[in-house]
Length: 169
Image 1 (cartoon, rainbow, N blue to C red):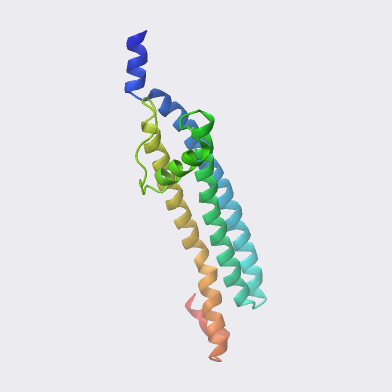
Image 2 (image 1 turned 90 degrees about the vertical axis):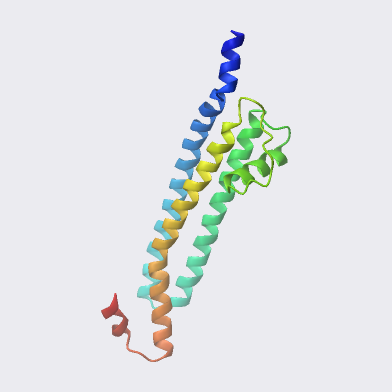
């Protein structure tokens, strides 16, 4: 049995189990929030474009980007709370700081996880990389209406007919 515990610790099996469950939770959370932000932005920006409220499209775009940022902060908190809840780190502040350092793959903190849990840092980093890539793809998709509002706004200022830009879309 001692050999089994040592093998389990050496292979970081508990980290894979907890990390896998948390990875699924964080990615489902991320996807659900991204879909809501993108969907609301798309509908609202189409309405604003049809009303020729181009400045409001820009404001709504930046608010949506800020909400995407807050999504990542929430995910760092989720990881930090899980590290603290499972007693892997001694205090909540250190747990959140470690999860943020790892999630962003900046790695400014040393690995302070106990033996048998070291692989969890890699799983947290993977979740951050996937989440950032997914967010970037969402932001790129959101820029279509933002660019259209920007172009139409400047065309109005230059007194260029609005149907001119429509020919290029």
